[in-house]
Each structure stands twice: as structure tokens, then as C-alpha cells.
Image 1: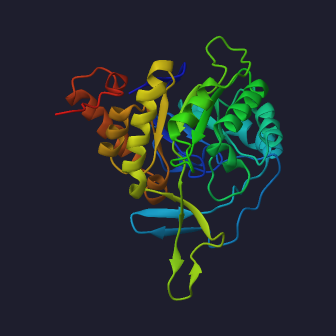
Image 2: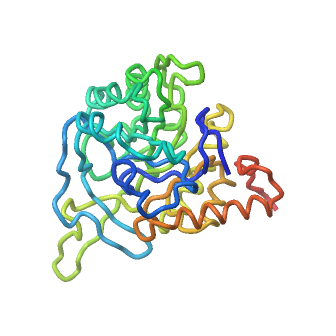
Length: 322
């Protein structure tokens, strides 16, 4: 079940999503480390953020709606006190640091302080958070996204770069255009195995959504709108992964982390067949922190039944047509 993610070896294809597993190693108190490939930290910004007031997370039918507002300790404290002390690497689990911001300068400041940190195996660029203003703008504008990725790569020359894209785009912009902009950005990496643009794509972030309390007439979360995650978005993300994989990622050799509504091994297997090399999990782990172990085992048995030696042999193997 080990995989190669843009040259980074992971012991499992399961990656815990940003914002759902704390800053780093909290999940080790309840999850089996050997079934995890990586944990993504909550998104880190240049300055500390308190986030939105309650309520900022509510259940809705078939999904979860959240508007946390990127609450976090800020890059200084994360780099000095959180990242160096985590226990993940001792268990063979990688740490991916999620980065968010309102401006290019904000993203670059955080990325620069993460580059070269021994405890960080990759940086995930969050350009698509639907419940804050500013950073999400990059996720709907391909030229702006390419500019951002290029600047971040320049500040992050020796660390693998993951770009996390939104599940939908406004106007005439589509997910393939955004993926192409992220991949073809022109930064200046130092490492021989790093690309000028995104080394990995994460598809996708939560979907912009809203829920209203019909008794009060008010939104159910304080921010008004937020991001929808969980089983309700799964089928949408399957198509997004397939479209990006067949249109550009396969040809360019850029692996995809499939993220959206995985609650069982069948969901994970769908992502693999659509073109994902790794499986992101978030909402499911909040409901059941042991679910990654169950899904890891299910994928292993499925890989064996499919006659494959490694899970990677099944990536993009969907059979279209009659």
C-alpha cells in the first residue's frame, strides 16, 4: 500500500485533510499510525487568527457545513513550537503544512518560513477556502493562480508543493484551466525532482454552500456561508479528478490527492480509478477517527482482488464506454 507521491514515499495512500486533524500529531492518540501516509496541518497564516464565532460547524443532510475562518496560531508559533516537536515522522507518517493567505505576500511569508524545515515534508497551498475573503480569489483566476504558485515556488525552492483547488469555479473558468495554471506556473525550484509549478494537486476543497434555520430565518453558521464536505460532494469530485487526470495530470506526471466525501473503501477506490494516487480524508475522521484504518484495509483487499501488486497500478483505470 506504499505510494510514491511526486518522489515522496508514503507508507499508505491515506492523507488526512487540512483542518480536520489539528496542527500535526493529535490524531495519533486515536488512529493507527501505520495506516496513515500523511497528516495535513490546519491552514497556517502569516498572523494568528481567531476565526469566526460560533456556530461555525453544523451537520446538514449527507454532509457537514463549516466556516471555521482559518483559526490558527500563525506561522511564527507553528514553525518554532509545533512543527519541530510533532511525533508523526517517528511513526513513518509525513507532515504536510497547509498555507493560506489574503495576498501573494502573505502566502510567500508563510512558505518561506516553512521551506527547509526538516519536520515538513510538503507544503499545501490553500487557494480555495470558501469561508474567508481574499485567498479564495486565486482559486477562480488562472493567471492569478499561476502568478501565486510561481512566487510561492520561489520562496519554497526545496520543498514539494501541493496546490489545493476548489470543486467549482465561477464564470467561464473550469477546473482543468485552474489545474493547468497550477502545473505550468514558472517558479524556480532547487531540487532535481521538483517542478516549476505544482508537484501535486489536491482535488478538492469544500464546496461553497449555505444552510438556513427556518425557525429563525437566520443562517445556521455565523459567517452566513461556508464550505460543504462529506458524502454529498463525493460524486462531483470523482468527475473532477477524472477530468483533470485525463486532460493534463496524467500527461504531465502530476499525482492527484482525491479529497471529498470518502467514508468507505469503495469511495476511495472510485477516486483511484478516476485518477487519484492518494486519498484525502477529512469529514469522516471527525465522525470516526478510526475510519482511515478501516479504509486502508479495504483498499488493500480490493487491490489484491483486482490482481494488482500495488495500488498505483489501478490509478486512472476506469473503463469508459459500453
